[in-house]
Image 1: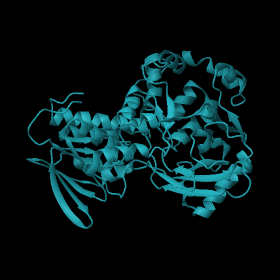
Image 2: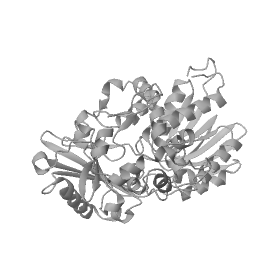
Image 3: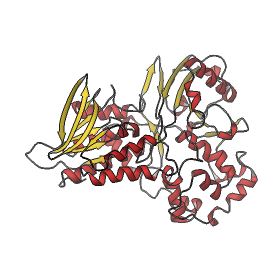
Amino acid sequence: MEPPRSTLPPPRIAVLGAGITGLTAAWHLQRAGLAPVVFEQSARAGGAIGAVRRDGWLHEGGPNSLLEGSAEVATFIDELGLGPRRLYAGPEAKQRYIVRDGRLVAMPASPGAFVTTKLFSWRAKLALLGEPWRRRSPADAEESVAEFVVRRLGREFLDYAINPFVGGVYAGDPVRLSVRHAFPKLHALEQEHGSLILGALARRNTSGGPKGRIFSFPDGLEELPLTLARALGEAVRLNHRVLSVGRTADGWRIEGESAGVRSAETFAAVVCALPAGALAGLTFANVPGGERLALLREIEHPPVASVFTGYTRAQVAHPLDGFGVLVPQVEHRRMLGTLFSSTLFPGRAPAGHVGLTTFVGGMRDPQLTQLDDPALLRVVQGELEHFFGAKGAPVFTHVQRWPRAIPQYTLGYQRFKDAVDAVQAAAPGLLIGGNARDGISLANCIESGRRLAEAVAQQVAPTVSR
């Protein structure tokens, strides 16, 4: 986007929330020659993206990697100047494990490996051959992920492929998630091609972008929001809580509070990049239907704890030769999965040591996150000893808790999107996005920020083009 050519001061745009969506939107607005002001209630920018560094260890308590699956994400990283700092996951991290019958089984990564894998029975493998001939569901049908997968692939694939994947991505339950909202690409494959297998073959890297490489940075993904915040400078206001958003004859009035002092300012437009609960709690004045956003309080966000444990290499028997392990619900274990953090990227553990990041809780076992740190660590240590032969106490630990971790795109989720869309349509200049509307992945949030900025530019400065 090129800056608008004008001698007038650039329009000021309020951006609510300094998570990755808000920061990305503000960065694009700034590049377009507009004047974003980012309001963040907490003392730091970055939202769920953060890291703890101590004594040679690095624990990322939120997202651990970014999928470079589109040209847009790749270009964005390069334009930020972070391109040379990319750390791509090495070949030793390619293997992914699933637990079956209490043991780790490698996910098949090729047709030949699929034929010989012990992860699925011969009956399940043979049933998969009929997938291209199974009837597609009506386009407007409301179907859970579980129903969709059982119908197309069978129960065993739900239990030992999709269920653990959903646990790792959403910390969720495929019985409750909507396939068209939680996994829209999966839904689209069936609708467009009549088959997941045929659709996947037809779509193989047709975007012209990167082939889905996973990367991070030397100091973790936190480098991304910190770089954005530095580029925005004084436009980012931390410890500033927004109390209300009001539509006036002159634009948009933002009332807020910082250090006990209340303030009010007027802006040309407002970008809401807040978590669903925070957005639902805002007061909207003179915004038709603004009260409908209170509905977003009903979006479920299960609690999740990220537990980092560091061991000496000699303490852990398993070679940790992969990305990590996911645990199916039918195995009745006490963790959702474990990332082999020190295998995935360098710099996560001191020399001669290994670092593991284990996730617990979610929709499966929310009560587990209520344990105090010593009790939670005992649970995790027991799981790591069982699966990886981790002996003795870890030499480093850190626990990060997320009481409201990930929005669940459950059956009937369209009502939340409809509420957001109705408010936006009735109030030009108010734009809403983020992980409760545009997808939960980090790439989704980056794309959401760009979309919000472009929509603002079209409404506020129509001469701005990208």
